[in-house]
Amino acid sequence: MPLKELAERRNTLHRKSDAATVLRHALDDVQIGPVALVSSFGAESVVLLHLAAQVNKAVPVIFLDTEMLFPETLDYQRKLAGTLGLTDVRIITPNRNDVLHEDVDGLLHQADPDACCGLRKARPLELALQGFGGWITGRKQFQNGQRASLPLFEKDGARIKINPLAEWSSADLRGYMEDHKLPRHPLVAQGYPSIGCMPCTTRVGAGEDPRAGRWRNSEKTECGIHFENGRIVREGQAA
View (cartoon, rainbow, N blue to C red):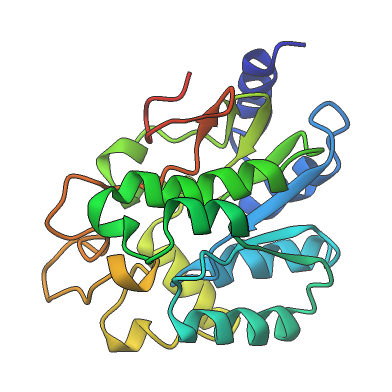
């Protein structure tokens, strides 16, 4: 079955399903095949990770360590994985030779942030997803205009991308974290409602969009971990 049709059928099937049901079915969907969860262990990641742990603690979790993350993120990743009992967290780093060739001084993010994200995120993720028929993300429709029509299931190159929290609001996320007493990323309390790499993330002021601190003063809004036939694709441009 063509992947686009498969995604459309799953969207129809799960139009009234809650996130836990979407997750459970996605992980057991023989037509999609093996599925991994990709997590940044960021400000809101604990919700999806907790939901997944309730379904299957052995779900493969891919964590992209760009080698430019906040120390707090790395510490949070280690502690949260242990707290939730996740048994298959795969820490993925950029190819060492590529980094030495393309970003030996660690300043590529200043000259070409898209290239830096490609080097440290998109390409390592593409390699990590080999062998998987689908991957689970924590994206939500409210996060920016480009995600407003985000479906639960979508074709993403040669895979199916699953977005169980697509229709969740900020209030839904806060409520879930409070109800389950989940540990928050320590930088949230310091004014970072959206957390990426340290050089490209700033605090967010009162009244600003939660993602205003990501790539501030630039037109860039996404890290580019979407790809089509091996090519990095900006959010909203994937076929």
